[in-house]
Length: 152
Image (cartoon, rainbow, N blue to C red; front, top):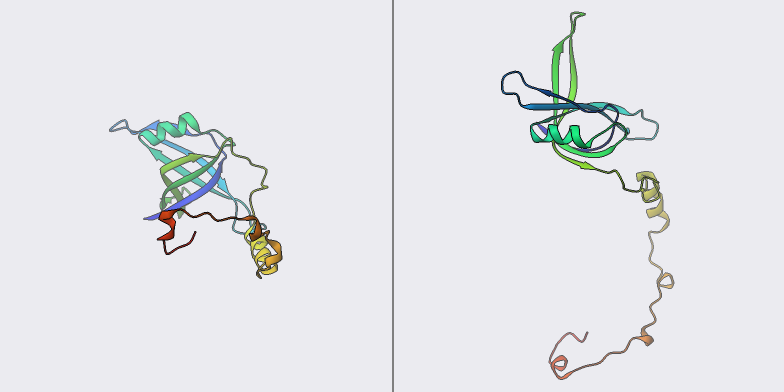
């Protein structure tokens, strides 16, 4: 069992079904998420929710929504009609967070490569970059402050 957190975009509306024996709600949908690098293609993953989370998925998620999904990643093996076995990854939801309404302009997002370059160019401290005019600060003391070993 592998726990993971994933930011993804819903690419198919959730489908709500019920188990035949206990009539427990089960919802499934497809999401896509970006690859690790810009040149990597987007990946598609099946997301499954059970019980109350299934109902929540059906009521609140729609195609095009952006989500943060927390859950358990599992691999399912099944027999294909062509005669061979296939494995597919599936994420079983434990928590779901909507990112709808959050600024999607990308202005507040910095790629990892850009952050590394920024760190290289701004790695040294230059006191001229900061306005530290200490002459403008005044200190006052009261009788209780006089006993305090830390003067600020």
